[in-house]
Amino acid sequence: MKAVDLITVLKAQDLLFLTGVPCSYLEGLLSCFSTEPGPIQNVIATSEGEAVGIATGYHLSTGKVPIIYMQNSGLGNAVNPLTSLMDKEVYSIPAIIFLSWRGEPGQSDEPQHKKMGRIMLDLLRDMGIPYQFASADVTETAETITSLKAAATSHQKPVALIFRPKIINSRGSPAQSVQAEYMQREEILSLLLPKIGESPIVTTTGKTSREVYELREQAGQSHHFDFLTVGSMGCAASIGLGIAMQTSKKVFVIDGDGAVLMKMGTLATIGYYQLRNLTHIVIDNGAYESTGGQPTVSTVLKWQGIFTSANYRSVTIIHTKAELIALDFDTNDGPRAVVVYASTGSRPDLGRPTTTPVENKAEFMSFLGSA
Ligand SMILES: Cc1ncc(C[n+]2csc(CCOP(=O)(O)OP(=O)(O)O)c2C)c(N)n1
Image (cartoon, rainbow, N blue to C red; front, side, top):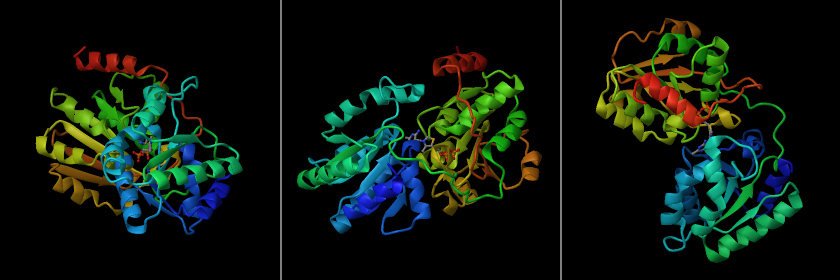
């Protein structure tokens, strides 16, 4: 189905408010909001749980039914406010969750999606959230949305519309970068890895980890320096903190702006524990680039002030290739933040790790000497 046709359905049903964190399965729909400003409001959230809160506020102030969109990975982040805020036994708030189904049993998908893919329908049932499936046929989907909205309204509770891949046509051209003048993430990584050298690195979810993996392959280097945080978006920095506490090695985290925003409390934890050997690098492309380049809210952040007030000992902000080339990691003056501004974009032929997460863990642990 065409995204514009789905938007017509939403308008006709007075479903004029969306909020969430993107999934690539919903890319075609979400890309319409920047190009087609209309009566539908799309609020960018930093985590799925936050989106449940925003949607609740919308309902409280309008009486209408909000839509919350998320990848099923993010359902975990939303379980708490779905069960303790929107639930019928608490505030009883109607909403429609547009939920992608990564890791559907029988379909091949990445390891980090398998468990949630398998338990998702049971989890919805256990939470008392009725669900239906979106179809590629817009008329059928319109009828499904009508019945879901009626159920959400009459029972005053959240319901879900599940999206399998390719239900919504994806857009033809990539999203415009909001920060087009900067280097792309892969070039930044190719300049960072030799500087980091033989130190442990924790890389964030999405294309950062995939690009680091490919750059190692291209250079014929071992993968044992790198812990690839393939799932658990936002946890790279806390994993790095946990490692840095137990080793004298310099530890590097390579994060994304969307991932930092998702678990921003970690900055304060890092600031509190004052580890000299921890460097936290954030590649800020102003977008959830890995899921199609939807904007994050990072453009409002003043990173210098954020890291300083979180008690990091030093902050380096990098805009240009020359500044990145001049960067060095010689001193142990952590917790150190390095923010590298980036434009969106990545290779269309970007691969995925061919080793399993457990193999990655074993190699990384033997490099750390903890296996
Ligand atoms: C909890 C959770 N929500 C959503 C996703 C889907 N997802 C994977 S990568 C990504 C974007 C990450 O954005 P950012 O950290 O800015 O890095 P970028 O992709 O821009 O390099 C998203 C939304 C996920 N994996 N987990």
